[in-house]
Amino acid sequence: MTNNNSSFPDTPQLKKSRNRCLSCKKLKIKCDEAKPKCEYCEHTKRECIYPDPSTIKRGRKAKTIKTVERKERIEQINSSAVELWNRQMCLNSVARQLDISQFEFRLLHYFQEHYIRIENTDPLNKVWKFQVPKLWQESDIVRQSIFSLSAMHLWALCDLTSLIQDDIMDYKSKKITFLKNINCNELFLHPNTLKAYLYDKTGEYFTNCLQRTNCMMDAIINQNYIISTVFQAAEVVISGILLFSFLALQPHGLIPLLSCDSAIPDILSMCKGMKTSMSYAFPLLYDSPYRGLFHLNETMDPPTITEKDRYPLIEYLRDELEKNSQVNKFPDDEYKIFKGAIDMLEIDFYRTIETNNPLPIYRWIFLIDIKMYDIIKVDRNSFGLKLMYIYTCLCVMCQFRLDKKTNIWLEYMDWYKDYNYRVFGKWNDSFDQEMYELVVGKKFEIPSNSYHLLETFVPLMYL
Image (tube, rainbow, N blue to C red; front, side, top):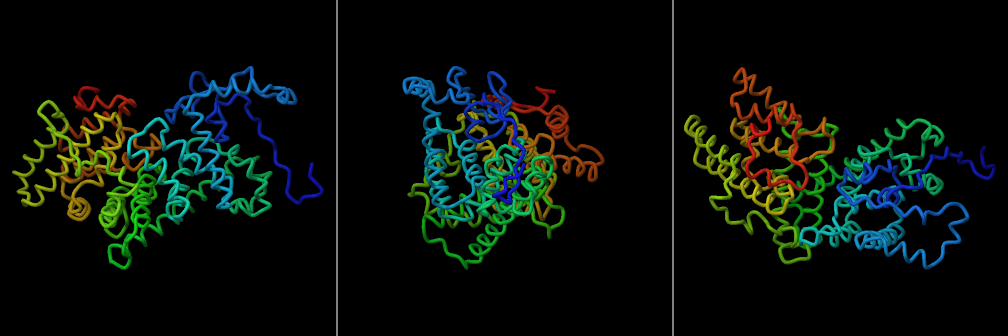
């Protein structure tokens, strides 16, 4: 039935669960209501809190709930949930001030929920908790980066029909621009139509972010843009981190890790540009509110590695470097670059085990010598390709991906296998073959909070 006072068609009402957990309820996404953890909370490693059935509002009876009962319910919510609620109020205020759509507001909310841990108080997390939201308000490129990353996550994670159901009314005010030419009845009757448009929206955010970032990096490298303020420096670094995260996580094959055609952009080339542009930005951030970015920094504050901290995988790479150096006669500077890359990976192992967090391993690709990008991409040095292969295996093992079946790391691992067969007629190294069989064949992953396993890791232990 159509409202005669509106040209906007009625939309089929989706059945809403009354027993969603608090996280799913705040994000307005479907909850499978699994106990003790729903699918969303299990996926995001969050505490799954369900409302007390005795206090769930049903129809008019909700109006009879007494103030005392409400206070009792509030007391049942732990401090983390309260802080999330307080932050939600702040984000609502920001959304109104900036006149963003509810859809974009929820993307921002998802970013806060998924990427920022309330209970984590280390300096790095404080930057993302307190400084990045301020930067989001002022920087369009950071805003586009956050929207693209969150949209990609939500698009791949769940059915988003319920996520934008409340946004349909914004159609009248033209806020939801990507719904302008869609018949809303068709939208809800055909979920694939919705997914297609959400996919397009993710692509739109990503394209805007990529274009802006590339222009900014080129201007900085060519010295047409001088970074002179903390805001400019933070914008360069934060947008770069977010863009790399998007490219590393995306399952759509937008940009490969390594392109065989030098004219085609790849993530290695982008890392080189980001590393160069960030080098101009870092000095302004050392004594700023963003100094937490350098907490436990591998180069500024390296740990002391003792003999008991030696890791089998790292020692294997050192042995391989010596063998390859003798056979291929690496120039001294090239040898030092490879040695530095292995030493850096050792530090990242140490930090990952120390903090029980794989982030240090993820950022290894940013910490290697800038000349190594060309050694791999341009020279196609076999040992450089091998180091990148080990890195991709570690990224899969440490769950740096959105889709288990399709990601840039598996794509490179398959390419590296083909490379071995093209050049050598088989796997040139049994260790590489074992890593492939373990990670690709057996789909091995290190369980979350068990990164101490890296201390003794060799692939044969798990085959």
